Image 1 (cartoon, rainbow, N blue to C red):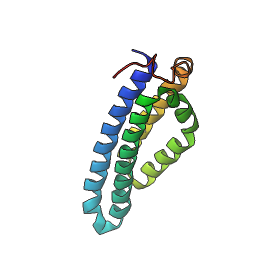
Image 2: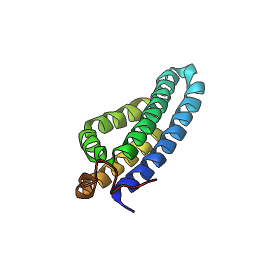
Image 3: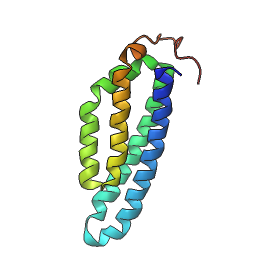
Image 4: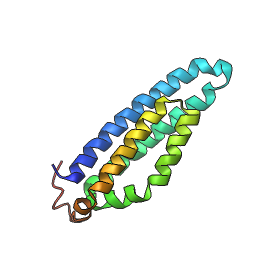
Length: 129
């Protein structure tokens, strides 16, 4: 399996992880509303759901244009680290799990730079999913 297909598959898994974590953040945040921390946890869960929907759109773009994978991940490190911090502070430790997974996925993309940069714009190397 080539690197582009592996990244797409792992991104789908990442979306599932983020939706599960966001749901947990919202559910755990509801009883914590009484002590004040719940609002930030619920908002963080809502943000994570929004990020999951955005990532699903990115997956569609990567399927159509796999040559976008490497440049996007290369430029996204600061965003990932900020997201990790926000989830750690406002979303609880459970939000860190998916952030770490995303960083591991970014590392995979960086290690497969050559393969991802040689993907044809028409998807010739990528093929059909």
